[in-house]
Length: 471
Image 1: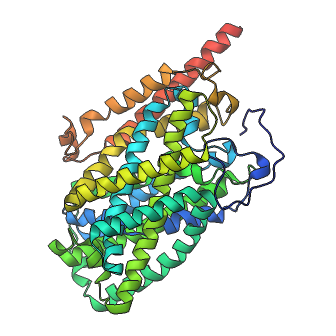
Image 2 (image 1 turned 180 degrees about the vertical axis):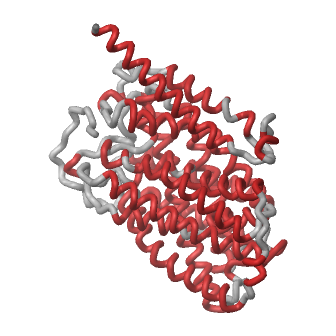
Image 3 (image 1 turned 135 degrees about the vertical axis):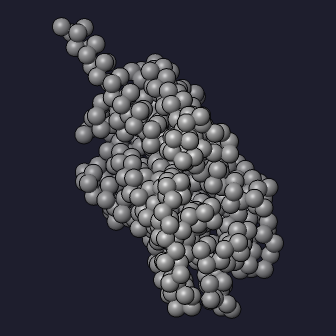
């Protein structure tokens, strides 16, 4: 696979603490890093409280421990495979994930999925701010809102520093997360009788599919920014190694977190909802150790929420630069975008805190409706239609080969969203055919396969038309 571009540079890799690149192409001379950093970033980033709470939802909403864990694992494997396939594009193109969709949607048309991505980042950042704010408030003895505001300030600083600092945090978060999780699992096993949890096995298709949807949506939600964190890797890095590093890191980290959440929620019963952070820390911990665990929770959330803040800045910059026909933005604009997105998520967090669990569940599942078609188009185009060929210079030229609006891509995306509507089971919308699947939401699976086949068919039609015109 190759990248078609006349862009080149002899510049040496920058050692600045603050990242100088934004959405622009990373020349080969500035590439750096090792594939293992992809593992630590996604492993450490997923060893955190929001993943614990998401896993707990499988039990809170009616599932048992055994089948909830099985469903969550199935969802991890499916979702992480899709996510890791996106990560491979980073070293090949040297670009953030979402700017590449200009090739499928047009320079201006790419704003459609990008706006939705920005909404997703703000939502995830808000959910992380709620939980991290609770932990920080307990640790330094301030109000939850005070904890949220302080956490938001930390995220602004780290997101502004950028790529190198984010990967360094991922490495440290992996170590901190492993220590905290080993301790929590040990206390959980030693101080609780888990025999009843394993014995209570009653397979329920609706609950199993819910668990699959929860974990797969968690993984697929990373797809719009996963290659943002692999784009500095050297171009010659093996696609297989990049895939395995991202896939294994994300699956292992997320499944560990969600397993802890399932077991904690099953033991706590109704005491879990509304006191997620307090209950997790209280699994036999008090005094100094409780403070250590609160710190671990905050540190884990810094990594994860920074990914969202950095991703939101990159997506917003891609929208603005597309319409202004620029390759990148200035440093002060970078800071402004980051501050605006983080403050918005902080405000949402403070307003939505009381109903967090329920709102976050619905938000997480409903996101799939809009990101599954984009993912299917992007991956099908990369692996089967263009086979990794991309004109990087044309991605900033509305009059170039990709045009302003690619109505074929936009129409296929719209069809991918519409085909899911009958199969959506969510508080926002109930599809007419959800009864076929015991009231469960499987729209994401139908939407991905349908959209991928449509885009593959469109690609073959275009190639056929070119061949006929040549002949």
